[in-house]
Length: 243
Image (cartoon, rainbow, N blue to C red; front, side, top):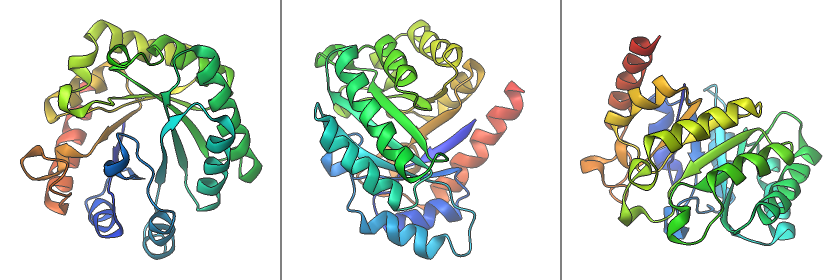
């Protein structure tokens, strides 16, 4: 299981890399759950941190509206920045058809740059609260678009975490459906330390956090290297228990 940690700035990215996170996920929490950051931030991360570190970087495209062309152009730009994963937040869609159209456009744009960059379709565990795309349709749309990773996050952070939005059985079903479709599966959404062993046991490939590596669990307070190191140590111990 790989741990993805989401800094919002170059300075936070330095701490995430120093704390030995598996994936540095550049986003902007001021613009939403998968808010898009200004392109010069991931560019600086690749240019400066990539010199001396083996860097795996994810870039979020935003909580996207149903505008496949806009999403595709954003994905192409992110791919040119040197991202290893590109995450499209399928927020403004309500059907499989809409989610597929956006993911197809995003994935095709990414492939114009590289076949090695992983295309991530991110749905929302709390989709019922705002009429979003169901987790089953997320898997189908990601698979049919020939993308690589099916992900769930939460859109409404003030209303709880992944486990508040979906039952354990639903989360396990999402993981299993993703794997049956030949996809990697990523989970996020105010995930806490106590959730890590559960998600590892259920077979999640990637788990994303931010608040869990901030003081007092407050994602607005900023990431610290100390919290990243402690979290990574804990996650590795959980993995050993599961293995």
